[in-house]
Length: 319
Length: 319
Image 1: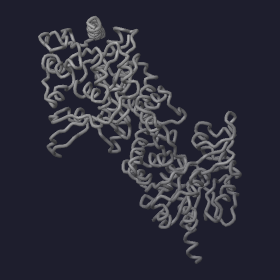
Image 2: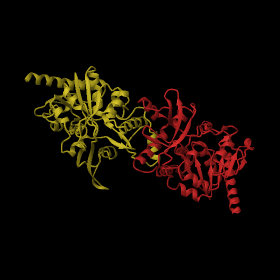
Image 3: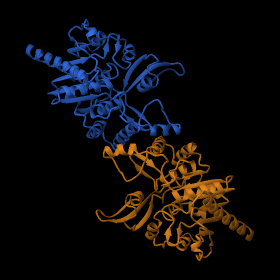
Image 4: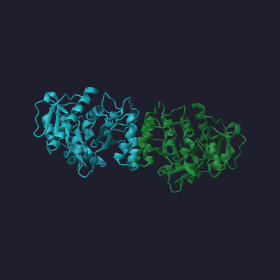
């Protein structure tokens, strides 16, 4: 069985770990968001790709959900001693090595997809991890900065430094227009039995991936099941509400289901508390969504995959 | 008083610390060797500049003479886990930060001399440290490699990886021909009351600095005193003998004094064991050369400076 999943960071990575446990023999291709990527200290940092790679490869800091386990921060402290920032981005020593290898390979002319494959040679995540594009796409956020007026800042500056404390007036994946899907992305989607959207941020993770021309159409042609990142009126984790508000969407499972809509998804998994959600043209099922432990996470992934396969069979029978 | 010193790594740095202690009010300009510089992991590493900076700035690992004190090697271990080498070059986590800052500044278009000044803003070495050139000069060593035949390798590969175990057939500062002294180098020499050669390697440290067109002539016009890096028939530390052999010079204080010669140096400090050394046209004095502690090192620097000032006065009187 071939499964494609689009994934952002923590939520996506944890869901994928559950999926891999649920169907260990499946071929899982993960299309990773690179809109959060940023150059820091002259090094290329890909937070979402690394979170997926570390989580599935056993190197993640479980407690915080990103970065390496047993991490130290000597390099960062030394950079601060040189007066070199930003200090608000938490790069640990182990993590630095990943960015050094990546940057060295990029400068040698390798594409991000080839670099990601090389990094995964070490981590053996048990899935094929492909960045959504080899081109540079950076999510920018327009804010009214009390000091500098209205300006566009890098997503990480808004998300990590400001913790989304300034309202986002708009959010845009800069560069997406001219970007091409990385080699293998469209092919993997076309070859997939089903496509899954983990409970990743619908705007700056799934939304950004879908903004790369060619990906949305390829996905829409498949049987797709999404898992709601919202329970009740709050994100399960992170600050997805701040992103949804920016695009004029309510922070509810209903509204996010409608945002994706029947043109894109066929099934929508919501929390039991949201069992009353209805999205026209989309099969909505209520399930426990909290990925509180490995079993619960595998159960959730199994439910999403099960619904997708069920909808796919129905669709095939109807033809 | 204005003093210029040419310096390689450990020996030069320790001598300079003694010199600074001996004449705390002097303006000391250090012209640093960059022929040992190397790009590792996409980062620009300047071993000699850093050794001078760390030693005079209080950050050096005293025991090994290079690298940072309280050093850890997490980044290097992680790079090795990615299969990325070389493993033979000992870059610690604290040290990495220096190379990250340097590389980032170089890529932003700053010259190495400006970068070095910026790094020294943190370390406050108490001397002005200028690289010999902002241009790329790399010392290469020709060896008969049992596996790959005759080939030229980077000095660091010969020195650190092979520990000079293959005889050097020749040693050349590649790029020196077309290099220009860094801004301020010639001016500092011209403004100097005297020039000192610490007991640095006469071939790959002092020799390399002098190979940059314009530096030798500027130095030769001044009163210069050198400190022998050889006691008896062995280098005080390091493997200078392997370099001297490559250029057909004996490993003796006599031979190195003659290598510099009266066209370049006016005075030559040798060990008491070498009191019989005579170099025509050069004033040779025997002194304890071992920089065994801070006092002995300051005494040695005071002796070198004292001899230089004495020869300068004599020269001025004779005119």
